[in-house]
Image 1 (cartoon, rainbow, N blue to C red):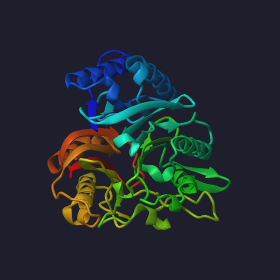
Image 2 (cartoon, rainbow, N blue to C red):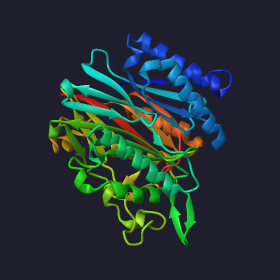
Image 3 (cartoon, rainbow, N blue to C red):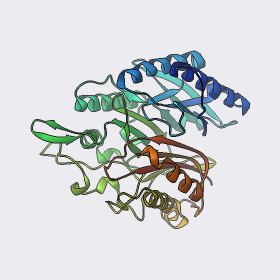
Image 4 (spheres, rainbow, N blue to C red):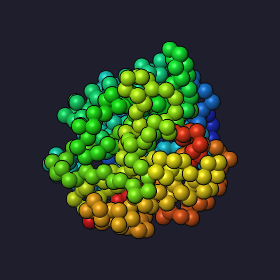
Length: 391
């Protein structure tokens, strides 16, 4: 899978910038000798001032996607995270590599478009969901439940379940906000974790939980974007543990903020793996979850964005070093070329410092920086990455 990034300064209204950015994407695809109909997923990051403007731009984006892609509409996610390039809009296009022997099918569930890619006569299937969200209500709990309900329906439609998800992005508005509910103090992120646990029965996840990024969004409703994989080869999907970070799903309650949604069940930790490998005929594809400056389960270098960035990068490297990958029977690389890296930065003023360190210490084909709240108050930066390793 190739990722094409459009992060340019366009002129005119934001609505016009949306149109220009999608046009630029199609031009980049054609210039590479690739086909627009091979785009399977879009991420559109937008800078807006309020929730109403976000809804207006979201409608504009959807309208433009349909106009540009016509009968080949990809899965898409529209995210209220400002690009740190200074531009108002940033587009990521995920496109099948030229010559890939795959079948692309496009479907809808209640008007929500998603894409199914099949390899080897259906022996391996990928589902690209795009951003699943519901109309924002006054009840954050209700919104979370509705989003997970829809995800479950989409998976069932494709004869899958939550255990088939290999990569997930959870965009959570006001992720760190704590609100009163029936005399309890409930944090949005902890609510999300508690509701996720209702759907994620550990017995379903025979190959581990998904790799995931749980990240803040400025506006919009709870949005779940995922890639699910079905393979007849059970060993094609393998979780990757960190030698320096505790499994997120084993966190103790002392690092979880706010009270439990259910006193009886207690507070649930984030249910995701540090990384996930999917094996294809010619390569191993590795999804590295959103990673931050955490050792064990403790935040390190509180208040120091430079040190947090260095520790975060070290944590990512620890996942894919040869010794760690050998432990799961996969060839590792002590100095890999990352196909794609995304950097989430809490404070815009830290952008230049973080950018300098990332680009010094990581070999990256493509990299994107956006502004977003991280899942702990004392975390200032988070990185995620993808690596394709030849067999």
